[in-house]
Length: 398
Ligand code: PMP
Image (tube, rainbow, N blue to C red):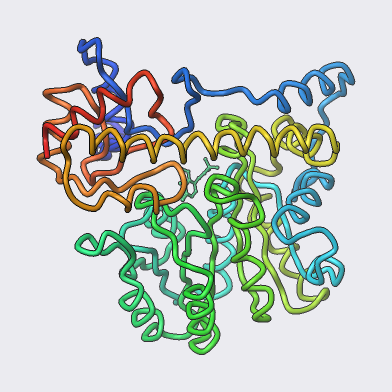
């Protein structure tokens, strides 16, 4: 009998399956809104000019590639800290943040999850309902029991904040709560700074462990605006986790550049936490890769490149916002009635369109417009060439 005879076929990733279906579709008008990446006005994945410039510099310097330290390139970790917590902030000057370079935001979440499992093996994890699908799977694979807290309110086309808060206020001490810092994936609905204060109060009162996932900083309202929640947690005097990613904000998806930041109480505690994070990394993949992190560190620490990045990021953010406004306008022009303001209220790459699974199926089969069955569409895949077709297709299934 074969060693692998008992191995069962794992379920396919639903989004990758959608891509395969899209590629096989012969409809010349087809549009893929199922993706989780930003496309530019020509429907292409951008290569940022600041990235290209940094890469040219790095190629010219032509350095040998030794191993990187377990916790990553020091200049990169420092640049991440300054971006996430603000240069000169008290947590940084006090040495209260343990930061490790990670394999994208996913890697940051996984290093944090493995560390938390050792710290508190019986803790439960709460993720938003719905959430990025990998949250649940990642924490389950790290050995946790994962439940969800209410988040999306379909009837209200917004956040069920009362439900969310009630759930947090009923959670046992030590529960790990995964929170989207900005640009909630998949719904696009974020909570307000005042609501964040209430979440923070619940985290504090119930002794919960906040794990912020910030995969889209700069895609919502701006770098500082999107990251403001981190400052709110710092101000509350909490110890917490922040996984960050440059996949979207630098369009460096394939380079796997992210980080895990753990805010601790004291400098001494931080050193101990860092030492444990390094064990997790060492026993998983030893140390991270060089290229992507060097690119990001170079851009963030070179004033001219940094300015260029901020401009390019604003370009992506504003194009998404323009597409949201245009989608509303075109849907109305197609005769769609009712309040569509939810589309422009949402933030980030995604929009929960409110369309049902049968409607999403019709969009695919009749029009070649591909979105996720949940009704999620990627606004960042819309452009001036496809938006009229998408709007008229949506209007026809409504
Ligand atoms: N968290 C969320 C909410 C995401 O949407 C994503 C990417 N789709 C990630 C984390 C992971 O990002 P990365 O590609 O950097 O691992």
